Image (cartoon, rainbow, N blue to C red):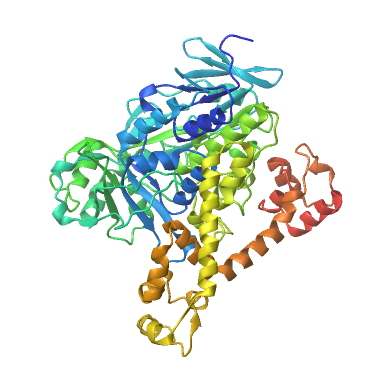
Length: 623
C-alpha cells in the first residue's frame, strides 16, 4: 500500500463533488474529497435556490437515490413553492429559496458524518497516470494521493477568468483563485477542451430597497419539501419580490456595451442560452420594454439580496446607474457587482454513460466541466459518477439510468450522445417520457434501483413500501365506494361537470378532469369520516389521485417507452470501426465514429444517423 492511498478521489466540493463523495463513501469505498477551501464546501455560487422547472424533479431523483441535495435544501429552506400546479402533474416542479450560509454549513456537516470520507484542502495541479490509467493526483503543495478512480468536478475553476467591464481577473469565483494545470495536461494526452461562460447578478443591501414598489411573492400556504426522508417542511417563510426593468434601464445598459466584454470579443466562450445576461435580453428581445426581476433574500441572518434576472458583466458604474432606475431600487446600495466568468470544459461526448472517460480508465468528469449549467444538473452528475466509480472499485456492474427512468438519464444521455457547445440546462421538454418522470414518483422509480446496489438504505425502502401500500389501499377504497347524486351534484355543477343521476363510483368520478379527490371528499360527509379514520400520508393520497386520473396516459407512455427502449439493450463495442461499413451513409460513419455509442438505441438518437443506418447496424449485430 502506498502512503495516502484511497479508492476514489473527488476533486472539487461543489454540488457535483459533494454528491460524488457522499455516494462513493456510502457505498463503502474509501474516498478523499479535495477542495481549495474547506469553508466553501457546498457554496451556492449564483442564486440561493434549488429546484425549479425540471430541476426540481432532478433534486427529488437525487434524493430518491440516497443523495443529499434534497435533505440539505429542506433543512436550509426559507421558502418553498410548487411551480406549474395549474398544469398536469407531469409539469409540477418543486423549488425552494435557500439560506445560502446554512446550505453550505449543512452540506459540510452532512459530509463530515460519513465514516469513509476524508478531506484535504488544496488545489490539484496534475492527475497521475501509469500505463494509460489513473493512479492518483498531485496537489499544488506537492502532496501525492493515490486512487484507481478520480472524479473531476472543477466547476468554473479550470483557468477561470472573471470579467467586469474592461477588467479581467483570474479566478474561479469572485475572490477565489482559479485552478491551473489540469486542462493543459489532459489536452496534451488527447482530450478536447473548450471554453464556456456564465454570469451572476449584483448583490444589494436589502435595507436600501423600497419593497412597496414591488409585488410580493409568498411561499405556498402548505409547503411541501424535496426529501422523501423525515425532513420537515419550511416554517416562517420569507417572501421574495418581483419588479421590472424599463426603457430607461435598457438605455443606460446599452450605453455601456462598448465596454462590455461580451460585445468587444474579450469573452469567447458560449453563454447559457436559457439564462441570458441582461445585456443579452435587451439585445435579443429588443421589442420588449421590460424584463422581470426576482428580488430574493440570501438567508434569514443576512440583509444581502440576490437580483435574479440581472446577470451582467458590464462595468460596475453602469450596473449601479441602471439599477437605480428599477422600481424599488432608487436608493439601492450595491454590495458587489455582477460579473461574467469564463472557464474550461471538456465536451461530454468523450465520456461513457457512467461518466468515465472512453479513453482513460478510472477518470470521471461531473458537473460544469461537462458543459452543463445549474446546481441540480451538476449534483445529479456527481451522484452518478460517485456511484459508478465506487461500483467499478468493487468490480460490480455499472449503474446507468435510461431516458424512461429519470431526468438524470435524459441529461446524461443528451450529453454523451449529442454533446454540447453551449451550457446545457434541463427542461421538461427534453424528456419524451415526462408523464412517467414526475416529481411525485421519483422514489417509486429510483429507490428500489439504488437500494439494490446498497446506496439507498433500508429505511427508505420501508417508507416507499408504506407509501405503495397506502396508495393501493386508497385506490381500492375509491373503487369500492359510491356516492349519491344529491350529495355530489352541487359540487359537479359548480365545477362545470355533468351531474349524475344514480349512485356512482368515486373512482369513476375522479377520472373526470373537473374533479379532484379533495373536492369529492370535502363535499361528502361519509367520505370525510372515512378519510379521517385512515392514517395515510398526504403524498399517498396525492399518488392515488394521480394514478387514477392519469392512468390512461401513464399506460400509453409506458408502452411507448418499452417499445422505443428495446434498442438500448442491443450493445455495440465501443471500439467498433464504423468506417469499414460501406453500407452506412458517410455522415453516419462520421457521427458514429465521433460519438462511439454504446447501444443501437443511443446511435438512433445521434443527429445525422438515419433509420436506414440503424437498420444496417441491426443486421450487423444479429437483430
